[in-house]
Image (cartoon, rainbow, N blue to C red):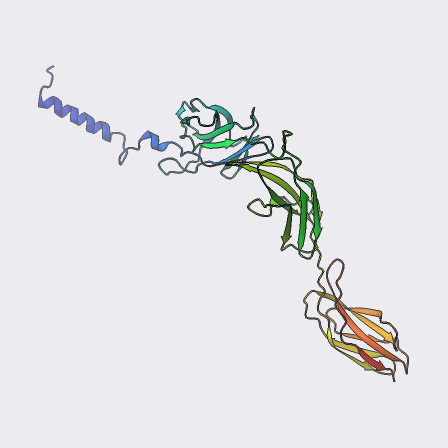
Length: 362
């Protein structure tokens, strides 16, 4: 059998390439393999707690090419200790590991503990052999079900700063729709050294006996007092305060103080009823008045005095009523009347008295 030569050989090669390119049935240009990798995690953040560094980040929802990333198999967290002024070490992935970095955790979506996953956010508490005033750098990666790893996240550098002790003697004094807080500063740092650095405070509040404690303000507050306003009266609130130490770019949060509770109460009385009228007859005195302007009135209290004697409460009536009949009267006796309004507070606030009216029973 003779072999093709010259142009015949070239034609056969071209045909072979065409057949190879069309035989798989795919349409459009192929996607480069690296564009199918998961996108890198993002949103790296951390806080220094009393004895730990709490690291959080966001798991990607897409791949590098923009398609959905649904087959997360594992998230990895890596750490490296770096000295002050040391050149930054780049993070490079090889066979699923970041070369030259310590792997702290492999977190699987179906069994994340001790990590905490909320939506696409992962939270890890690092307590592994931390040294005070050491700078730690973190990166994370994600791996899909086929073993393909993302690129590392951005570097997150954290200085492990000594945290302050808890504030002391937290006191909560309830007012009308507010609670006044006061506390004493920490006695020092958790390692026994004197308190130093810029110290501020995070105030946490919870409603009821078991309500979750949440920050009252987004940023720590200076000073040793705070007035928490805009609260619901008759609701019990729980408070703790944490000291925050800041030096340069480093921040450390101390443990919370003891809990203090307070229940705001309404202390402002409603306006007085007005236009009180008294109509006597032989056996009774009928009273009527204009309602207090407050929508929070629960009852009205009726007061009576005989002659020039002192006023004595003789009855109450629900706020829906603005009339009262006094049947315990004697013919020929002179009586003075007044009415007050009481609100719905746990300890009701009583308004000033209405106008006073005087009548004589015929």
